[in-house]
Image 1: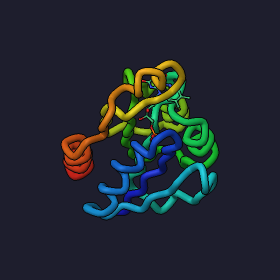
Image 2 (image 1 turned 90 degrees about the vertical axis):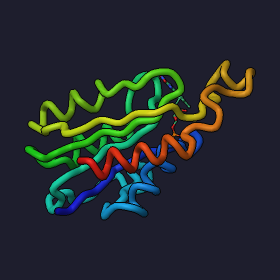
Image 3 (image 1 turned 30 degrees about the vertical axis):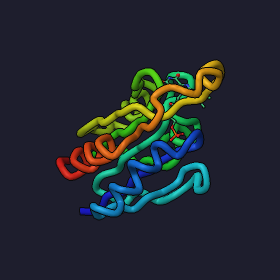
Image 4 (image 1 turned 180 degrees about the vertical axis):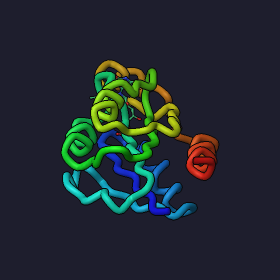
Length: 143
Ligand SMILES: Cc1cc2nc3c(=O)[nH]c(=O)nc-3n(C[C@H](O)[C@H](O)[C@H](O)COP(=O)(O)O)c2cc1C
C-alpha cells in the first residue's frame, strides 16, 4: 500500500509540522506542491492533500496540483491547519470531479499572523502543538 501526501505550507510551516511527523512515523512520501507542481500519482493507493487555509480555501498550489495530477477514482484524505475555521470545500469540489473517495479529514489550529492578527501577536499561537501533532499521526495511522 503506497501513500503520498501532497502539501503546501507557506505561512508559518504549520501544516509542514504535521506532515513531516506523519512521514517520520508512517510510510508516506511527501510532495511539496509549491516546489513541485507536477508528479505522477498513479502508483499511489492513498493520497493526502494537506494545506493551510488561505481565504477559506486550500492553497492555490494544492488546488492546481489536484486539478492537473490527480488520477480518477483514488482514495483521498485531507489535512488542514487554520487560524479560524477548517474549510475543505475548495479541494472537495475538485475531488468530486475526479470521482475520489474521501476516507478521512483532520484539521487543527495553526499560528496565524495574517493582516490585523499581526497587531495582536497572532492567533492560535503555539499551534500546532505536540498534542495536535500526535493527533494528526493518530489520524494518519487510523486510515
Ligand atoms: C493570506 C492568508 C489568508 C488566511 N486565510 C485564512 C482563512 O480564511 N481562514 C482561516 O481560518 N485561517 C486563515 N489563515 C490562517 C492560516 O490558515 C493558518 O495560519 C495556517 O495554519 C497556515 O498554515 P501554514 O503555516 O502551513 O501555511 C490565513 C493566513 C494567510 C497568510
